[in-house]
Length: 167
Image (tube, rainbow, N blue to C red; front, top):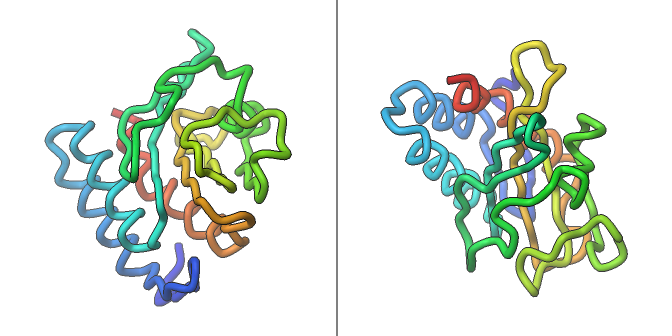
């Protein structure tokens, strides 16, 4: 895990150690999973100055992804969708972060908000690192908004918040 790391995310200096501690505290004291996930989404959005953050459950048996919570200017257009579609489906099938700088040029993109120009989807894995249980979805109205620092930060956050998918 990162220690005393500061990253520049969208022009904002983010203290990862503090963010990881805050996320861990949410995960550790949760009473209600949905409320904890909402708090996580809002913490990521506020700390990193992201426009929109959504957290999704992945159900491979049913072949769907389902939005559990979101924070930002509006609800996602598709709250549930097949894993065979969208950038989330790509992240689940490849088991890798998908970072798209121009969603309008990517045929996999399922429009969520009319003003989204770039999107990053980060898988949340089980303890083995083999199965995707959920995703972190962050969207921006700016093209090429997400850097390798965003990927690094969100992938590390996915590990911290993983217990919210493990039950």
